[in-house]
Length: 122
Image (cartoon, rainbow, N blue to C red; front, top):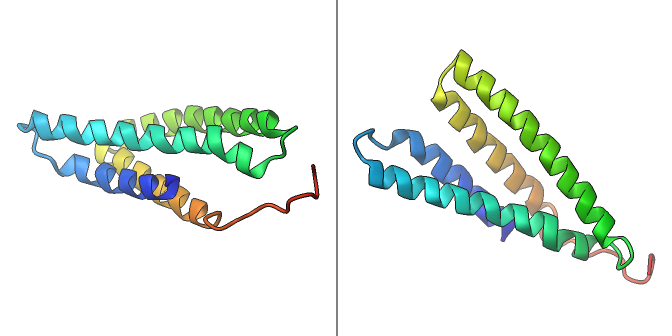
């Protein structure tokens, strides 16, 4: 589900700069979908995936580790996005976000049917 939401995020982030400036309602709806498609994978990756991939004893540590890297990535993305906007344009930032969402979706597809070995760690 997170991979599907990331691909939809990429699609709507690509669509957003093409909406005419006079159309504030389509812009608002596009940003609403972008926000929803950003929050969904975050919750699935930070909340659910550690319980599936980590052991019973380590799932909270895995969640903290993944969440910590998420916040580091968000901080770096904010700095890089600001540089793109200042140096090029808002379009460059949106294209960066599109590429990032698609790459993240592709990386999550590699975990689509992954099942950790049971009994090895717990």
